[in-house]
Amino acid sequence: MSLIAVQNLTKVFQTRQSRVEVLKGIDLIVGERERIAIMGTSGAGKTTFMHILGGLDYPSSGTVRIDGKDIFQINNAERDAFRNKTIGFVFQFHQLLPEFSALENVMIPALIARWPVEQAKERATLLLEQVGLRQRLFHKPGELSGGEQQRVAVARALVMRPRILLADEPTGNLDSRTSDEMFELLNQLHGEGDFTMLIVTHDAALARRQDRVVVMKDGRIDG
Image 1 (cartoon, rainbow, N blue to C red):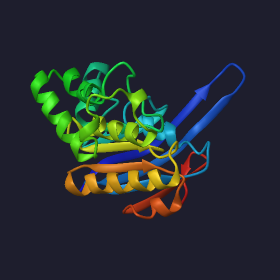
Image 2: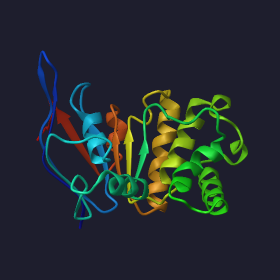
Image 3: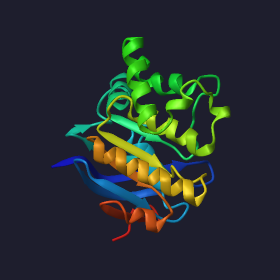
Image 4: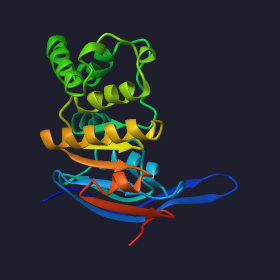
């Protein structure tokens, strides 16, 4: 059964001087619990595609349906709530808030959803333990290594038990050993959880560990 259905998705950026087509008619079906790696050269449109999939940006045309719901046919408040509940994000740059501890950073999506503080804290603590940061709960991002910061970001992405995890170059700033560990962690969490996972990566060896590899080229899915 498909969870995500993308049809004829386009994205155009218009400036006074030029018109740039970033996405040129993307079609993609993603199944429940599927693991997909998205590959392609810089400028292929991968990040734009991920942002639209997650409702962070608007398409110029086309549809994105998640569990049958067209996410661009609901109002902004509904989409924000839907995104917070349904989609977790991990970015190349972890985007943790520097003034907050690892535990506080992971709690944020749950607090936005108005979970009781103790419930949010319990869930965040469990996830940080799962990603191997039991001893780092109260450390701030500046006190953590790059790999540890990304583990916090993964825990934050999963705190709401999302149905979809979108990871855009999650290992882009990590060395090869830490990158491999991060992919192993993501695959482990996927095996233990119940979510669909789409990962943008330049690493072909890591991509082949997923269920399917989708290659983007010049704003289209190649083949």
